[in-house]
Length: 367
Ligand code: SAM
Ligand code: DTB
Ligand code: SF4
Image 1 (cartoon, rainbow, N blue to C red):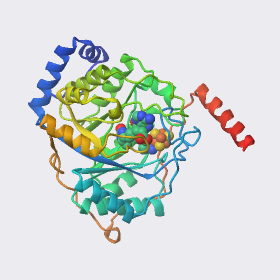
Image 2: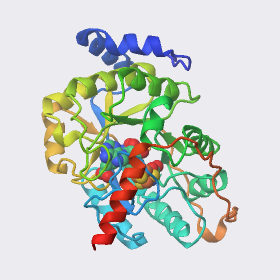
Image 3: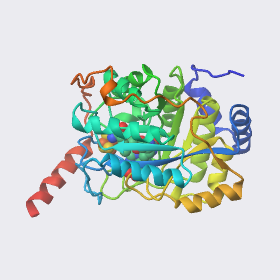
């Protein structure tokens, strides 16, 4: 049964992506049924534990401090607040909580200790815990693993070539290094990207080459449709057509047969029929709850209605991999090393950064 390949070429992937839709759907659904229960979909809940004020320049992101969006920044949530939200998520059918922080990278210190305690707390609720906190050192990855982390999300976002048009404050290799650090532990890898940022179909294929050539491939691959947020450099991007989402999901399923493909951001603009085609094409994971990190998401009751209509069942936790143990802080065998993740200082610049900075300066002067 193991046909997982790590040597897909861009041409092969483009041929898969561009074939007639019915052929693509048939092929993808065949792979999906061979590796997964087609009627089970994982339901995760996102929790923005630290919102806004991020120093990075990711062109899509409403949380980057340099863009002027309506996002209200927040300090790190308390462990009790997170526990209460996790219990709510569990009661509404989620098996996983994914905690996101608008950080460039993890810094050792009291805030990271607090995140480790959040991980311990949620793991003890018998839910899968995922974090997305930016770049990570090996020691930090090991400490998260020891606390009971199940997955770490760090997206490649797009192809290596197009990446230079989207982010200038860190390089593609930095992302691969963080994923590599997670791989040195038992924590599963969640890494995917965004479509609809102005990239070409070749870039989408390029991203799938990069993800599928990882060995092992990521256990989870989120496919996000850009949520074009006012104030970000991508505010004018046209919405992604559902056909593109279906093609991207199906192609991801074919080149990464064992992974959970997540139909991520952008579902508020998708009909139930459109989403049903994505599930048929191999998507088997969604984010539920009326908010993603900062932008809207369908209401959980409506999602559960859709599941009923389609005969889909939410996936139970720890089906794919055993629940990790939690080691309490006082028994930890790792010390905080105070190291920073390696960073490649990418040399490229993006014109819009200057524009954004000037706008910010003007705005400050008029206040
Ligand atoms: N700061 C951390 C980082 O960048 O790794 C974690 C949070 S970040 C918001 C997680 C991911 O959300 C990004 O890598 C990106 O793929 C996705 N994302 C952010 N803004 C988005 C948007 N407007 N539309 C679609 N996806 C988005
Ligand atoms: C991922 O790939 N998508 C999620 C999760 N990983 C962290 C985040 C989507 C964020 C969409 C924009 C927002 O709500 O701020
Ligand atoms: Fe947004 Fe994460 Fe980029 Fe910061 S690092 S701007 S939070 S995507």
